[in-house]
Image (cartoon, rainbow, N blue to C red; front, side, top):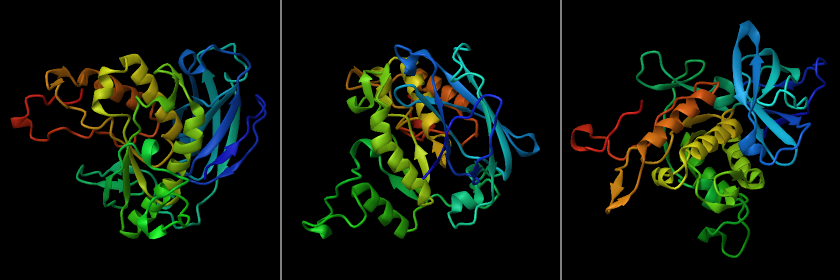
Length: 321
């Protein structure tokens, strides 16, 4: 579970303990009201750590007056932070400062011990931040936060009794861990109504807190890397580009400090038309991919789930720019 750090008075930073590669959550309280904070305001926090390391993280609106920043320190030592808001007159969000101290991790979670994934120096495999090789073994759990239940389970071994793991999702995770899986591949359906109070322009943070946060925290605590996409390819025909990019920024803000690998979307290079109907606009996904890279202060590995991998026989293939 991530640790919550309450806002600190401007110019009066106080140290707070945390551990490497684990999510620490900083809560800021807006001093102003906005008609739609999700769409009308951007907040970023810059962290400066040992040896001058600098990581920027976008904040996300979490309902009411509350904004949160999730940060996983990458090194042991003192980290200082400062916030910047697109509305510089908001004293609750702009120019806030503080610090936290990162102490060594003593557990056995492989991500917390070795760090986030990166591409190896020889460009041939994935490894952890410390250089330890990583073996990718996972299966797809598309639309996990839409369909995998955390409070009920229909596994036949339970009969009429409760799930010993808590729910369908937790049972699936326990099963995959027992099989030696290292990755959980998923994405939310960006067009599902439960993510929105107003389609594609008004986010519903309660759904994120109640379901998606619970799942992402559990996956991280179980030592799994999350290959996280931002939707199905045909979402590009239903959601305007600017709204889909804003959705991507929100997910990066909310989950970019978890052990993730970005996969942009499912079947990103699907044909523009299927069955005579508009099916995909790959240029929109190019824009989303660029927004993900812009907001991701960690440089997580980033690719896409492909429609067809054979470039020679797929006239619809378009490499990402």
